[in-house]
Image 1: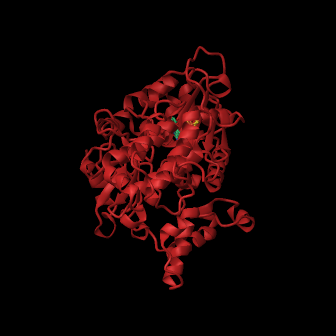
Image 2: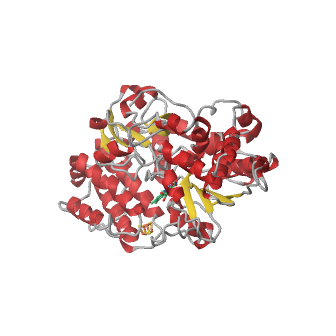
Image 3: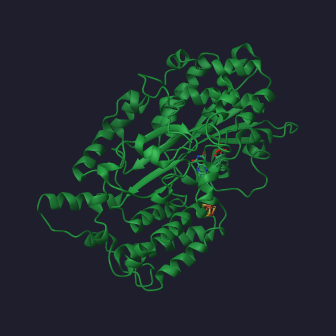
Length: 505
Ligand SMILES: Cc1cc2nc3c(=O)[nH]c(=O)nc-3n(C[C@H](O)[C@H](O)[C@H](O)COP(=O)(O)O)c2cc1C
Ligand code: SF4
């Protein structure tokens, strides 16, 4: 455990143009590839195994071990697929990484593909982040031009082609088997396992699916050696990782630190809670992980310690909420996301999340009945562990843990609207006018920030909607109130469209 930041992946994010290949080479970029190509494939694989690197996409599976599962006796081609779908609420590390230093990922892709003896690799990027897609495409083009990709890489005799693929924008396509279906051109829905992708993945061939950050960590391991990487972190969670802090902290952002750093240390690095407010609860690894509270401020944020505390390290997406936040409202917003993103393949998740939203709206409006809380927990327990993939487990994890930690807030939903207990404007991060300004600023990104070709797109596309319908309602209400127009109550705007049984109105 330590409070020292260890910028490795983020070391050059503040430079002038760290995404350019010349800048990357100036910092020693592609030296790790040169070194890897002097090693045998097994030596590279063993170095990653010895480093103790565990997958940074959520589950924490040992990366080198995953690579070793690829059956080299299988005559089919081997594939590497990089998972850049990053859509979990609160998770914000892969997209900035690809935007700031895309060549770290390209270099990692080449080394990893070499180790598993793949000659084709795919980088799958979430559909909405067109600017990141452009940046990765440019990085891949530049790597081809410099002889890092293509035939006979750096005269080594090793060939590799890389395709950058944009998904259509679905959270479920981050689930590795849904991602593979999507990459093959089908509707992205999870596959039955086994067989696991390492045995029968893309086009039924052996495939390694790894997270962006996992693969981007590989060049540093090869360059500095596995012992260097393993010297950081904890006994079973080695190395460093990017922690994304969002919400009620003074300086939200990405903080790269050894695994095992505590939230107390991270909040300090982030300048403390905003305006001296107090921590109420947080997600350790995105909204699909059980919420934790200020009791856990000194919990080492590594895989095993967080699991022992009843949650998951996930993607180290620390969404921080202070005492002004309504847990009921927050949970509703998360479940609305899971309801929307459910792929519909199985009934408990498809229907159950819809039911949870209806019920939570009643709690939010103070219209829930006695017995609704037990009913809602019963619905949740029939979703988690009874659905096809982990999306459903994640969806109910936040709700069940929220009720466990803050039951009285849900009980209050039988008589008092959440917005009366926790006036929403108090937890809002920006005043309405500031938020409108932020929305406007989205249209004025420079080309360097938005990626090549973005200016052309900006002429033909509307500004990206920053606010969802509910937030937009709040802005309208807040602006009207500020102008002294109408003393509108939020509960008039948010009157739930449900009947007494929580069904469709
Ligand atoms: C609903 C769902 C969404 C997921 N989204 C992502 C994602 O966006 N990025 C990611 O790397 N892993 C995601 N995962 C985990 C992947 O299935 C897989 O475990 C991961 O890509 C493996 O990479 P790693 O071993 O390097 O962590 C998701 C899993 C689920 C169930
Ligand atoms: S649990 Fe949800 S997301 Fe996963 S397969 Fe079933 S319906 Fe699709």
